[in-house]
Structure formats: structure tokens, C-alpha cells
Length: 390
Image 1 (cartoon, one colour):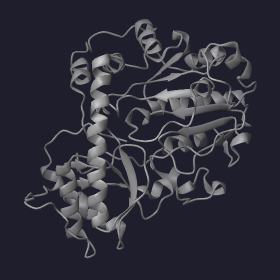
Image 2 (tube, rainbow, N blue to C red; image 1 turned 180 degrees about the horizontal axis):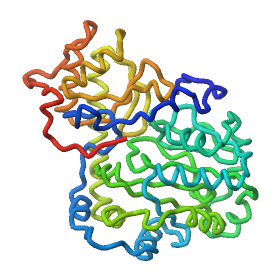
Image 3 (cartoon, helix red, strand yellow; image 1 turned 60 degrees about the vertical axis):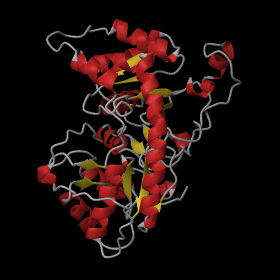
């Protein structure tokens, strides 16, 4: 992994806090080919989409979400009391940050990955948690694996994250090694279901010591439906209770409930598993096309990756692509100037990107496959729905 930014520089850059930058639709509308998000390009999952479309919006969900929590608990093999629902991953990020700020009475510190989702920093800034490059000095530690924007393994783990022997997750050995203290590690698992290579860093017993945050809408290609949940660490009953007290009533609406219930259905998981094979093939093709055009792609384990395009004014080039209905995510806000993040899309979108890139820069080449003949539509002519975001 290349080091673009030292650990001493990772915390809460003021420029990134000026405005929130995301992929997905913008003032120009929905891009015809949207590489700017990490959503599963094989989606939407038909079964999950049908479930969302059949949700009854005329009634409140069960305010306690009893059945949903039990379904999620059974899926993960944990007790239902360990499931915390959230309106979205971002909502949970802000809620647990607020809770940690309360626990530390204004003296809390937060550790962020060198390149990470901006809401970690936004929430810390809003709740007064001071940044620290020392992962062992933080009361709140953020990790994401595969990470965004790089799609790589997390490198900074606190020393209190012990390595007990594998066994049943409720075993006395695991409980005995669970650290005493106030430090919390939240592992953002948004892209864990979209892992295309390599293996997770943490063992099953280590995962029992951290908060695991899941937002299945990306894996299912339904990012417009906002719903998430966290699996709490062992022995964190008090923290779960206090987080529930900080939550508004009905954090997840009827469509979000339908999405999460569909998430645990075997047929949906089978669809997801099949989609990973397709995404892996598309990723190989996409990287080869970009490399032939002079791009440098960085290593990634997920359905997205960062790359450095060849020379020129990147801002102007991205604007030119956007005018042709193609959007990429400028990675400067992640601390990676000169790079873009690209979700893996289908071959049609890849060919459109390569052709539009050749038109946007003198250094671009046109390695389009023989027989390729297409017209990249301008953004104002986009008509294809695209649920991707973030």
C-alpha cells in the first residue's frame, strides 16, 4: 500500500470539513455512467427490490423492531440484545460519536484511518472529539475494511484488541480477554460483503471486541434506501442501552425494514455471492482498459479502487467527463490529490469512460474493443435510473 499521508497528518483536515463531498447524483442530475459510488453494479438485487417495493408505507414499523432484530441476530449468530438499528451508517456514526463524547466529558480523542469516509471526521468535529494519530490513545477508533476509498486492509489496530484463541463467541476465554476501559473501536463493514479478494484482518474472537457496522444497501445496489445496523461487542449492554436512549423513535422506516429483512434471506445472499464473480471479471477488464490508457491503478480488495489518471488538469478532465454523462469521484477530499475513486461498472460503462477520456485529454488514448460503436449521452439526456450514492 502506498503511503500518501503520514499518520501525523490524518486528523480532521479543515479543507475536508468545509463541505461534504459524495459520489452519486449531483446538480446535473443522475449520471448515465456513475463510477463515483461503491454500489454493487450488478444490482439492484431483484428479490430485495421486490421486498422494498412491497413494503407498506401506510403503517409504522414495530417501534421496538423485535422481529427484525431477531432476524439480524440469527443471521450473525449473536443475541438479539446486541443488535442496534440505525437510520443509516452515517446516522450511527454521528450517534456513537455523540455517545463517546458524553462518556469522555469533553476530553475524548478519536483516531481516523489516514484516508476514510468524511463523516467520521465530521461527527468528531461536531461533538468535540480531538484527533490523535496514536491509535492507542483514542477513546473512539474508526476502521473500515475493505477501506474507502482505497479498498484495502486497515493498518492501524489498537494494542488492546487482543488475540484470544478461537472458540465459541460466548466462551469465558473471550469474555475474560475483552478489554476493560472506555475505548471503543467501530469497524465499518459497509464493503465487507463486496470483498473480491484476500481475507479480513480480524478473527472471529477479535470481532467480538468491536462494533461491527453494516449498511447492506450498497451490496444490494439499493443505496437510496437508508437503513443500517450494528452488532455490539460482547459485554456492552450498558452502551447499547445508552445508544438506544440517544436514538429518535422509528429510526428505520418501512422500506428500510424491508431491505434489512431481505438482506438475511438465503436467496438474496446467493444473488450477492454470484454477483461477486461478475464484479471480479468486470474489475479485471476495467483496470486493464485504464492501464492501457496510461492510468495507474492502486491495489484494492473490493468492487472499487483508486487510480491516478495521466497528466493534465484533473478537475477540468472530470468536468469534461461529467458533461458526457460520466462521473468519477475526485479523491482529493480523501487526502489523495491527483487520484480518483472508481466503482467497478459493466463493460458498456467502461468503454464509454475510455472513449470520453480520450476526448477530454490530449494524453488519452482510445483502446476501445474492436467493433465498439456508441455515443456517450450528455448528462441532461440521462434517463436510466441509478440508485447509487455516497
